[in-house]
Length: 351
Image (cartoon, rainbow, N blue to C red; front, side):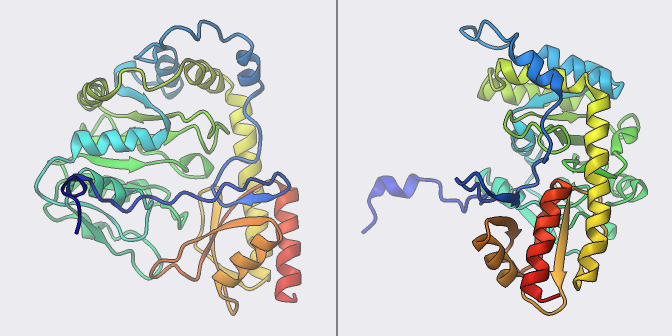
């Protein structure tokens, strides 16, 4: 018989992150990290960090100012958090409080339904079409809010700006969140829509294109009213969420735009070369505008390739879920890492 106190424990099915192998001699293509180191300015700033005995600036002003200046917006339009996951979780708490369900795709970032369940937010998923595209008309109905990644994850498919505008036009009474974790790898940000739509919140991250997954830096851009609401919730939860090193090192990264553009260009070039090689091996995949491919082989099940690669210390991501259980999400690493992965595939597939 269940003890009475156990009945008051919140039961949720948690998000399952990608595996972080303990070995060092691996090719890690399973969590979409950047294969290149952060900007040299980040390393330089490390030696200048001091006063760690003091609490960090709760407003993270230096980082907020750096982002606002870089993006060409007012600092009142920027909110920073401990990775985009923190920003998104706070956004769920702040903006999704209707008794109507929020809407997001059925194949998407798998943290969305976890947060909805955790915060007791009703939700409905909208099925992607057979080509894994978001059907904008599925988001026209009455709802409590809308969220989707662009490019979508794990498919890598980008929705054009006119599609985002169309969804916003049909959802002017709720907050619409566009999760742009991968936008720097070939997509057009929805930032130009901020002045037109006060209910639009755009979330980005330093984990992918800026090589700072280990620091946990994410941020949101939106109208001052949305950003004030986020701050109110944050300060009701934890005033000191971002540590001082993250504030200073994140700002240093933003200040090195040339390095940022150089490394993202390398990843894009590697992705385009890699897609051609993968097609020659019998793989198909949507057109990716992210730093990964979502690939399926013509004859060999994805799970078999995933398990065989893992035995060779090559890690890719496999999702045991309906509609996508025959796909692998493969992060774009360095040219050398991708060549080694291709060598494994040619041997395994006898190509």
